[in-house]
Picture 1: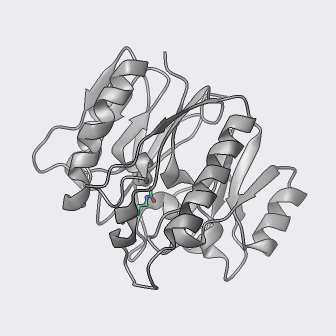
Picture 2 (picture 1 turned 90 degrees about the horizontal axis):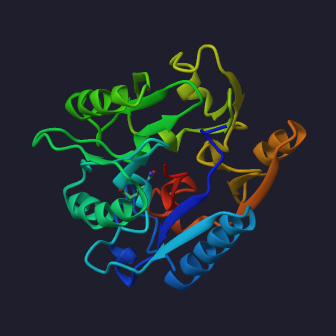
Length: 262
Ligand code: CIR
């Protein structure tokens, strides 16, 4: 199952400057020590599945650089370096490119000057690449990515992130080859027709951003009703604290790039 079986992940240590990271609503500064402790738990969970985790050092010049997912799309055939729509994050993608070049034979790049796209808006399933237009991802970015992944045999489908939601995957996650965890508000858009969908429990929308990584689902701590639904559905969950990244609108998927390089 290429959409959730991975040999590798890349993470980046939270910089001290993360306290200045972007956020839609200010709910207070993240506690850096606690954020780093959660980050260590996250890496340990990835490693416990047998994967190799490339742990990159902190980049102080980029407060949001721990959220490596936004810098690239990693597929078995190759990687695509993104062009983040947040101006303060553009340079993060350039920092990631050489890391990917060291691991992949083919690394492509979103290049169009007016094209923007962030990895948090991309959900790869067994059969397609779903990309949600958002405040960070525009039509040009989606079209450019569509051309690249078509060369690797992927069908890309453009969908829409609900207004006020940062990224498409803020509201959904892949649980297995044909099952999606989604908020009701995103599922109501009809974008998951044909998939089996499990909804987050009412009031627990912030738990929609989880990741399936090999045999585990890494799931944010503090959402007991959604957790119980997933356990009852047969998934093996590893709960990871996310209180500090949540203050910067970050979650489980944002903290890694996950892949099996060709
Ligand atoms: C940002 O606003 O860009 C960061 N504070 C959070 C990025 C979260 N990334 C993700 O959902 N993939």
